[in-house]
Image (cartoon, rainbow, N blue to C red; front, side, top):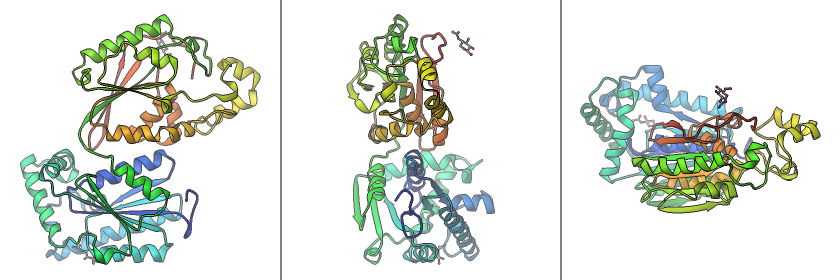
Length: 421
Ligand SMILES: *[C@@H]1O[C@H](CO)[C@@H](O)[C@H](O)[C@H]1NC(C)=O
Ligand SMILES: *[C@@H]1O[C@H](CO)[C@@H](O)[C@H](O)[C@H]1NC(C)=O
């Protein structure tokens, strides 16, 4: 699948559903997740083509099926997005997500035809259905009010207009049904409460579905930090277990105090997830929390055969290996050990659970692990992950909303500069 081309493996995911059902949100999240696990993925959002090529100020009337000009222009936008998508899949792209709002059988057949003519890529439809007014309302407020379509419009006007737009689409809407039995599809009902699947086969589609079923848009913070400074950090040793230094213990106490005072991390709500390494276990000791979970998946990048060496010894004794590591920090794998990409692979279940969690989560792990998790939330290209700044004694606070992830960094105990990378 991963390297497939031509009948082999590439996948087109098509979003189906009325406006305001979280389609674009899902599309963005799936793309970010797939890129993080190293599938080249891009979203082709027809609305963005419309905004880019026709300007942003389209109100409900434009979406009225009885407006012939609007309809013609929307078809042109759908074509433009389709052309670009096929070009992308013909080159580096492995997964493409087609995100538009024309949810008719005619559109689905058109997509199938275009794709079959191009290369016979796998096709997966994801329909988001939601009749829960509270979820729709929150969705509109969380996502649409900040859409460029509604710049300079009052929130009330925007909601009103958006509801009209939904009504316009409802006139032609055809949910996935008996006529779609030939397709691979999944219906996601009421934000993942219920899933209905048809002809779903293979590893990647299954993975996408289980990822989607964990998503929600309840805002909550996530806190990431490494353990306090340990003896191994002082000597820049690559691996192994060691106790905290006195400064590391200071950090552990400062972290506990910070979380206690911070209104968003009251002990009665936070979940504390930490690595099984002794430095992390010692760091979390004074922290009060609602739940505590030790994850082996949060352990440091395994330096394998070199884990007893300091960085200087590694550099001096294994010049060639050291050069390979410097040349490619992302893919370099220590003999009998791990690479950053290996760490990402084992962090997948952590990401699934983080997406699912509705409570604030505090993670105490190790710099490489923090970089990988941070890279996911900030949607960084994989190559940048090894370069993410993740100094000891700094707590990274991430606030996730439907549109973005906002970070704040708290330096809790100053750390002496040492050359550990
Ligand atoms: C929906 O898509 C189909 C097929 O691409 C197209 O013929 C039809 O005009 C579209 N409907 C609207 C309302 O844009
Ligand atoms: C650590 O290094 C940075 C930049 O090299 C410097 O600005 C900072 O003052 C140093 N901190 C300490 C505690 O030495």
